[in-house]
Amino acid sequence: MADFEPFEEYSRGFVGASWSPAAAESFASYLIRSGGDPYGGNVASDWGFSGRGEGELLLNFRVVEKVWGKDAIPGPAQVRGDCVSHGCGNACLFALSHEIYNRKPDEKTKRVEGKPEVSKRGVSQGVISTEAIYNFRGHSGDGWQCAEAAEMVCTRTGVVLRNDYGDRGGPDLTNYSGSIAGKYYRGNPPPKSWQAIYAEHQARTATNLKGPDQVRDFLAAANCGIFFCSGLGWSKTRDENGYAKQTGSWSHSQSIGAFDSRPEVVKKYGEPLVLIINSWGSHWQKGGRRILGTDIDIPEGSYWAKSSLLNKCSVIAISSINGWPIGKLPTYGAKGNI
Image (cartoon, rainbow, N blue to C red; front, side):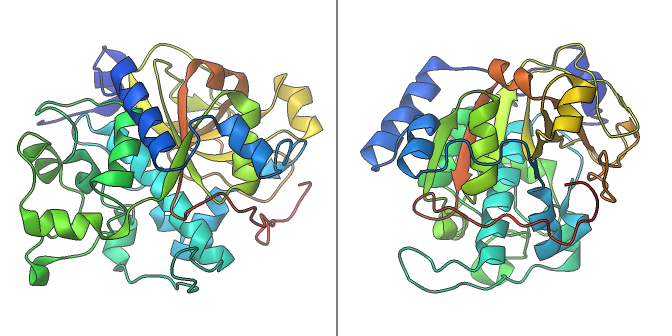
């Protein structure tokens, strides 16, 4: 799509993300068949982390920065309507980064896995290939559903690093390519050699989340990544602390990078805030980035939003490991009132 400007396109009504009851039902059915639970509240209760993170600043994006550096977020700006694959890819990036940072043994192999090799250029392009996800949407055009993308990264494709796979008969995914993203879909799938590479590192489990409390709990304890689809739009301008007002409408998918329910934040904004990572590059939005009361800046291209708005979103958590073990979420060297 030539000269695709995401903010203008989505604000004019472009449908990059849509709701499909059939996709949601298929995703829930898959989770049950695979031994998972489509209800995140049940998962949090069963694993004993309901209520975790309440009143705290949860800086999950710092895990990605610690593992990959600050260039990994926000990644490249969309050049077509493939936002769902960007949101899902970022969720996979967060899950993978937690696994690396916390050095928890893989639940199947029992090995503690190290950080995989990705070039500096690949990191700046987002670490995880979004094309490998988008190649499995159900039609040839642009736009998709979050539920179907989550099911695909668990079953048909997976977590594919931004590397050159030419020596194995695969594509060069070092640079984000809208052309590769749009070329294939399930009715015209990628070559078999590509599919074999794509499926090597699948996400093992996922679940649906409902409302801000469940998002907070999972960010605090579940070693996962979270993304969502919604019809909500936001301002191009942030305040001095990185907060943006909800305005307008986008049929869009984005990922979640932090949660702030500290009393001083609730006092200033009326409720906890959630950090949204957009896929429109570094410069689509202007304004402050310094987190209230700290020495920390949120990533370029991201913004704080009122967490109650998550009640209007279809939210999914993805983990790259088989289960939801409670992980330690330290402050990662941050200073200030956290």
